[in-house]
Length: 187
Image 1 (tube, one colour):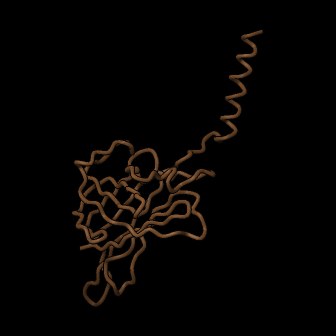
Image 2 (cartoon, helix red, strand yellow):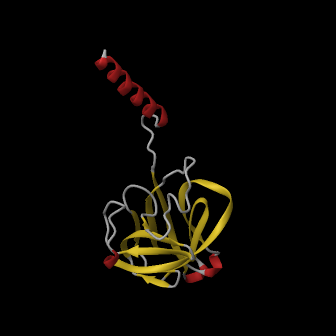
């Protein structure tokens, strides 16, 4: 009788878990954003300078608190889920005033009571929670703003500037009711 009760409890727990996460559905799928950066060439035509590519895990809030919860305050966050968020650029960048040479990097963030920072780290190909501060290339202050409509799934955008402004734009990240942003340009 005892074995039957234990088997029923295990089967019940398995059914509840299966109901919460449908088979084949990844809780934090990979997201990618890529931008070809253009400059004005001869005859006022756009000429491709190179690409900027970001690969990241996209966790969903699913009713959980994001700011101060899923995005911790005062602790470095992996800027997504699962494997580390990667930045690969084949052009030199300036992000928020900081020089980023072309290459491969990992992106993290640090939210504090007074603002947030984007961390560009030289260590690559690690799990998202493996962070070595000694490998930081730069820390960039982010503009923090509130959103009227919450964003359920963590999302990163590279938003191009106006064509007349040259090879520049905005890096934007949002989750819950918080948005983080900074400018970027290519050299």
